Image (cartoon, rainbow, N blue to C red; front, side, top):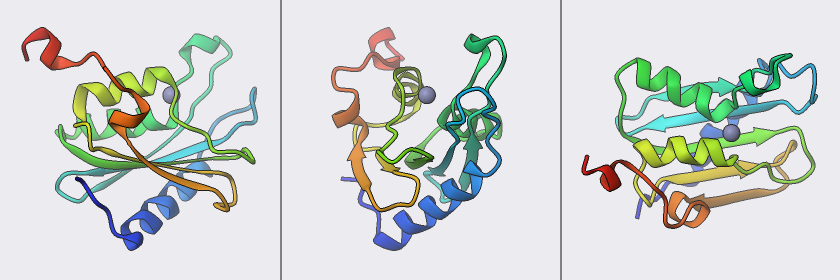
Length: 139
Ligand SMILES: [Zn+2]
């Protein structure tokens, strides 16, 4: 099990909250920040970036993953996601599929509501059971 300490969880939530301030969400007003922890201990931040052509919008989680992958990282331990809603904002299906490419079943997914009065700590396997990934293609 890929356990994180409470201090690591708090740090990732701090970084995700910081990233949320960089969100570009003029249409939904739903600002999201993410902080992705690599296997070797680096943290990559991401925010959602909306677009007038809505399908061009990208989520905070994918922004963080793509920055990290560009820098050469391929293994990850956890991601924290914090949005502006009163309820938890779990990663969307597209982001979960990106996680399926790079994350093990015990990858930790932390979600928090806007003021962190609600926090959920889960695993990739719980949020996307029976996922399709590289192993299905023999990689
Ligand atoms: Zn998403």
